[in-house]
Amino acid sequence: MVSGSLSETGRGGGKGRLPRFSTYTELYNYICPYYMAMGMTYDQFWDGDLDMVDTFRTYDRLRHQRENENAWLTGIYYMSALSAVMSTKGEKHSYPSEPLDIYGKADVEQNTDEDGQESEYNKDERNLYDKMKIAMEVFATNINIQKDREAKAKADAERILSHQATQTEQTGGEIVG
Amino acid sequence: MAKEIILTDEKGNEYTLKFTRRSIKRMEQKGFDPSVAEKQPMNTMYALFEGALYAAHPDLAREQIDELFEGLDDLNAWMDDLSELYQDKYTTSAGELKRTKNW
Image (cartoon, rainbow over all chains, first blue to last red; front, side, top):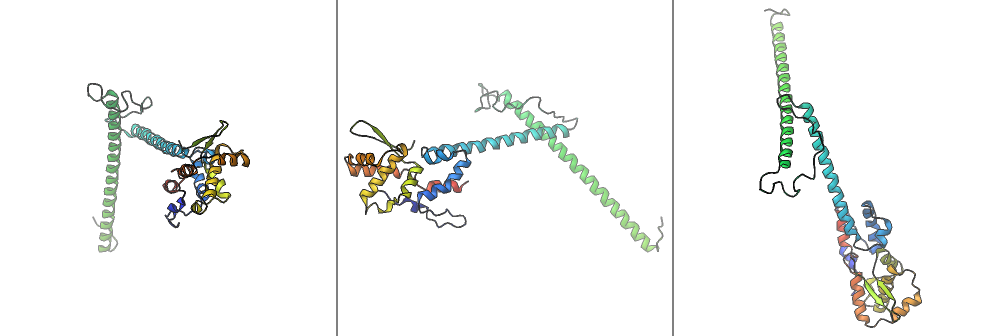
């Protein structure tokens, strides 16, 4: 028998709670913009198959996943560029001469060749990543050494000034020695 | 694929019964209230039948709908089928709301 199924949503509204609707019309008016933001047209929402929303939700999730992967890939290229600029002669890293093969030369699902050994593509990618990582670590270490030297020099200067000030007080304004 | 029912009249014409959000909205605008189904079963039945026809046959005249309705044989079975169609998971609200809340 038909029943008032909208009572399932009766959680009272308020902060963090689902809003309360008395009719399906109110519910649909509420959720329509959400699906339109995913790319669903107004007519698709109101006149299309009811299960079309599942497809659009899946599409939206995959789209966000792809955007996230693109952002990550951009970060890899940034890291590679910075490493190329900051690397020293000993651990020289150069920017890749061609785009990363994101789909892999070997089977995408497997990182090993048929004989069970690590694939050449996977080795190349890992080596590239290791080189970038070493270059960034060397850069960070050099920065830290430089900072330590500056801090030590500043401390020495302050100690000397303090010593001179003390001596001036003792000799009545005249520096001795 | 959302469920639908194919109705064939005496002349062999086929009619598709299904619900869309627009047809449900139209039903509610015309005063459909599922909570009174037990008190007004025939009115509820007719409203469901008319609403289910509207999605695929919006230009069907009132006389034609009445004729089709009168030609239904087992009303109890039809009532169950149309109720199930109406209560299909995609027309219920809790799941839809929860999914919007996660956005």
